[in-house]
Length: 209
Image (cartoon, rainbow, N blue to C red; front, side):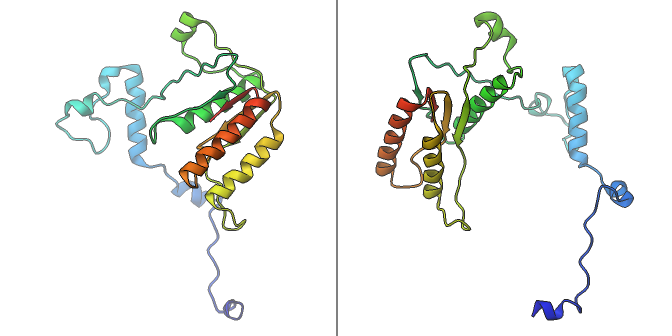
Protein backbone atom coordinates (compact mmCIF):
# COMPACT_ATOMS: atom_id res chain seq x y z
CA UNK A 1 0.00 0.00 0.00
CA UNK A 2 1.37 3.48 -0.82
CA UNK A 3 0.81 4.69 2.73
CA UNK A 4 2.87 1.79 4.11
CA UNK A 5 5.65 2.45 1.62
CA UNK A 6 5.68 6.19 2.22
CA UNK A 7 8.49 6.09 4.78
CA UNK A 8 10.63 3.83 2.58
CA UNK A 9 10.23 5.96 -0.55
CA UNK A 10 12.68 8.79 -1.23
CA UNK A 11 11.29 12.29 -0.74
CA UNK A 12 9.88 14.08 -3.74
CA UNK A 13 12.13 16.76 -5.25
CA UNK A 14 11.30 20.31 -4.28
CA UNK A 15 9.95 22.29 -7.23
CA UNK A 16 12.09 25.26 -8.28
CA UNK A 17 11.09 28.67 -7.01
CA UNK A 18 11.67 32.16 -8.33
CA UNK A 19 13.40 32.91 -5.02
CA UNK A 20 15.96 30.18 -5.69
CA UNK A 21 19.21 31.65 -7.01
CA UNK A 22 20.11 28.37 -8.67
CA UNK A 23 16.81 28.42 -10.55
CA UNK A 24 17.44 31.93 -11.84
CA UNK A 25 21.00 31.05 -12.83
CA UNK A 26 20.01 27.91 -14.72
CA UNK A 27 16.99 29.44 -16.43
CA UNK A 28 17.45 30.45 -20.06
CA UNK A 29 14.96 31.09 -22.82
CA UNK A 30 15.15 29.06 -26.06
CA UNK A 31 17.99 30.22 -28.23
CA UNK A 32 16.03 29.79 -31.45
CA UNK A 33 13.38 32.27 -30.32
CA UNK A 34 15.99 34.73 -29.08
CA UNK A 35 17.72 34.64 -32.46
CA UNK A 36 14.43 34.92 -34.31
CA UNK A 37 13.40 37.87 -32.19
CA UNK A 38 16.68 39.67 -32.81
CA UNK A 39 16.18 39.20 -36.56
CA UNK A 40 12.65 40.62 -36.33
CA UNK A 41 13.83 43.58 -34.24
CA UNK A 42 16.55 44.42 -36.75
CA UNK A 43 14.09 43.95 -39.60
CA UNK A 44 11.67 46.38 -37.97
CA UNK A 45 14.35 49.06 -38.25
CA UNK A 46 15.60 47.99 -41.68
CA UNK A 47 13.38 45.53 -43.64
CA UNK A 48 16.26 44.72 -45.99
CA UNK A 49 18.10 42.98 -43.13
CA UNK A 50 15.49 40.25 -42.81
CA UNK A 51 17.43 37.40 -44.40
CA UNK A 52 18.93 34.09 -43.35
CA UNK A 53 20.34 35.45 -40.07
CA UNK A 54 18.05 33.30 -37.95
CA UNK A 55 19.63 30.25 -36.31
CA UNK A 56 19.40 27.11 -38.37
CA UNK A 57 18.75 28.91 -41.65
CA UNK A 58 20.47 27.87 -44.84
CA UNK A 59 23.56 29.77 -45.81
CA UNK A 60 22.53 29.93 -49.46
CA UNK A 61 19.53 32.12 -48.63
CA UNK A 62 16.62 31.23 -50.86
CA UNK A 63 14.01 33.74 -51.97
CA UNK A 64 11.47 32.32 -49.52
CA UNK A 65 13.85 32.84 -46.58
CA UNK A 66 14.66 36.36 -47.69
CA UNK A 67 11.02 37.30 -48.07
CA UNK A 68 9.96 35.78 -44.74
CA UNK A 69 8.34 38.22 -42.36
CA UNK A 70 6.91 37.99 -38.85
CA UNK A 71 3.26 36.91 -38.82
CA UNK A 72 0.76 39.73 -38.57
CA UNK A 73 -2.79 39.48 -37.26
CA UNK A 74 -5.54 39.38 -39.85
CA UNK A 75 -7.88 42.35 -39.55
CA UNK A 76 -11.62 41.82 -39.68
CA UNK A 77 -14.62 44.10 -40.11
CA UNK A 78 -17.89 43.32 -38.35
CA UNK A 79 -20.76 45.54 -39.39
CA UNK A 80 -24.34 44.80 -38.37
CA UNK A 81 -27.37 46.83 -39.52
CA UNK A 82 -29.50 48.26 -36.71
CA UNK A 83 -32.50 46.09 -37.61
CA UNK A 84 -30.53 42.79 -37.56
CA UNK A 85 -30.50 40.91 -34.26
CA UNK A 86 -28.92 37.58 -35.33
CA UNK A 87 -25.73 37.24 -37.38
CA UNK A 88 -24.65 33.77 -38.56
CA UNK A 89 -20.93 33.41 -39.25
CA UNK A 90 -20.21 30.56 -41.67
CA UNK A 91 -17.05 29.26 -43.29
CA UNK A 92 -14.61 26.35 -43.50
CA UNK A 93 -12.69 24.82 -40.62
CA UNK A 94 -9.87 27.03 -39.29
CA UNK A 95 -11.44 29.92 -41.20
CA UNK A 96 -11.58 32.29 -38.24
CA UNK A 97 -15.18 31.91 -37.06
CA UNK A 98 -14.30 31.40 -33.40
CA UNK A 99 -11.74 34.21 -33.55
CA UNK A 100 -14.43 36.52 -34.93
CA UNK A 101 -16.75 35.70 -32.02
CA UNK A 102 -14.01 36.25 -29.47
CA UNK A 103 -12.99 39.52 -31.13
CA UNK A 104 -16.57 40.82 -31.05
CA UNK A 105 -16.89 40.01 -27.35
CA UNK A 106 -13.47 41.47 -26.52
CA UNK A 107 -14.17 44.72 -28.39
CA UNK A 108 -17.52 45.10 -26.61
CA UNK A 109 -15.87 44.62 -23.20
CA UNK A 110 -12.99 46.96 -24.08
CA UNK A 111 -15.41 49.70 -25.13
CA UNK A 112 -17.45 49.15 -21.99
CA UNK A 113 -14.31 49.52 -19.85
CA UNK A 114 -13.32 52.75 -21.61
CA UNK A 115 -10.35 51.24 -23.46
CA UNK A 116 -9.30 52.17 -26.98
CA UNK A 117 -10.50 49.74 -29.63
CA UNK A 118 -7.75 48.69 -32.10
CA UNK A 119 -8.61 50.00 -35.55
CA UNK A 120 -6.74 50.57 -38.79
CA UNK A 121 -5.79 54.20 -39.39
CA UNK A 122 -6.63 53.98 -43.09
CA UNK A 123 -10.06 52.51 -42.31
CA UNK A 124 -10.69 55.27 -39.77
CA UNK A 125 -9.66 57.91 -42.29
CA UNK A 126 -11.92 56.42 -44.97
CA UNK A 127 -14.99 55.44 -42.94
CA UNK A 128 -14.63 57.34 -39.68
CA UNK A 129 -14.07 56.11 -36.16
CA UNK A 130 -15.51 52.67 -35.34
CA UNK A 131 -18.77 52.56 -33.40
CA UNK A 132 -19.29 49.87 -30.78
CA UNK A 133 -22.73 49.39 -29.32
CA UNK A 134 -23.14 49.41 -25.54
CA UNK A 135 -23.91 46.00 -24.07
CA UNK A 136 -24.75 45.49 -20.44
CA UNK A 137 -23.52 41.90 -20.53
CA UNK A 138 -21.60 39.60 -22.87
CA UNK A 139 -22.79 35.99 -22.77
CA UNK A 140 -20.76 33.35 -24.60
CA UNK A 141 -20.75 29.64 -25.31
CA UNK A 142 -17.34 29.13 -26.88
CA UNK A 143 -15.23 26.02 -26.64
CA UNK A 144 -15.84 22.43 -25.63
CA UNK A 145 -17.54 22.06 -22.25
CA UNK A 146 -17.34 18.29 -21.89
CA UNK A 147 -16.37 17.03 -18.43
CA UNK A 148 -16.01 13.46 -17.18
CA UNK A 149 -16.17 14.72 -13.60
CA UNK A 150 -19.54 16.39 -14.16
CA UNK A 151 -20.78 13.65 -16.52
CA UNK A 152 -21.12 16.08 -19.43
CA UNK A 153 -20.61 15.18 -23.06
CA UNK A 154 -19.85 17.76 -25.74
CA UNK A 155 -23.52 18.15 -26.56
CA UNK A 156 -24.79 18.23 -22.98
CA UNK A 157 -22.05 20.70 -22.04
CA UNK A 158 -23.20 23.08 -24.78
CA UNK A 159 -26.84 22.66 -23.75
CA UNK A 160 -25.98 23.45 -20.15
CA UNK A 161 -24.21 26.65 -21.15
CA UNK A 162 -26.95 27.69 -23.58
CA UNK A 163 -29.56 27.15 -20.90
CA UNK A 164 -27.72 29.62 -18.68
CA UNK A 165 -27.34 32.05 -21.59
CA UNK A 166 -31.05 31.97 -22.34
CA UNK A 167 -31.86 32.57 -18.67
CA UNK A 168 -29.45 35.52 -18.38
CA UNK A 169 -30.02 37.21 -21.75
CA UNK A 170 -31.84 40.50 -21.74
CA UNK A 171 -32.47 43.67 -23.77
CA UNK A 172 -28.81 44.77 -23.44
CA UNK A 173 -26.98 41.45 -23.92
CA UNK A 174 -24.48 40.44 -26.57
CA UNK A 175 -24.74 36.68 -27.10
CA UNK A 176 -21.91 34.72 -28.73
CA UNK A 177 -22.55 31.07 -29.65
CA UNK A 178 -19.80 29.00 -31.25
CA UNK A 179 -21.01 26.04 -33.34
CA UNK A 180 -24.51 26.14 -31.94
CA UNK A 181 -26.32 22.83 -32.33
CA UNK A 182 -23.14 20.80 -32.80
CA UNK A 183 -22.25 17.55 -31.07
CA UNK A 184 -25.40 15.68 -32.08
CA UNK A 185 -27.29 14.53 -35.16
CA UNK A 186 -26.97 17.25 -37.84
CA UNK A 187 -30.71 17.39 -38.55
CA UNK A 188 -31.68 17.56 -34.89
CA UNK A 189 -28.85 19.99 -34.17
CA UNK A 190 -29.96 22.33 -36.96
CA UNK A 191 -33.53 22.35 -35.65
CA UNK A 192 -32.29 23.02 -32.12
CA UNK A 193 -30.00 25.81 -33.32
CA UNK A 194 -32.88 27.44 -35.21
CA UNK A 195 -35.08 27.34 -32.11
CA UNK A 196 -32.33 28.82 -29.94
CA UNK A 197 -31.60 31.64 -32.38
CA UNK A 198 -35.33 32.43 -32.74
CA UNK A 199 -35.55 32.67 -28.95
CA UNK A 200 -32.54 34.95 -28.73
CA UNK A 201 -33.75 37.11 -31.62
CA UNK A 202 -36.72 38.08 -29.48
CA UNK A 203 -34.80 38.63 -26.23
CA UNK A 204 -31.29 39.90 -27.07
CA UNK A 205 -30.40 42.87 -29.31
CA UNK A 206 -27.52 41.05 -31.02
CA UNK A 207 -26.56 37.39 -31.29
CA UNK A 208 -23.51 36.24 -33.26
CA UNK A 209 -23.37 32.52 -33.93
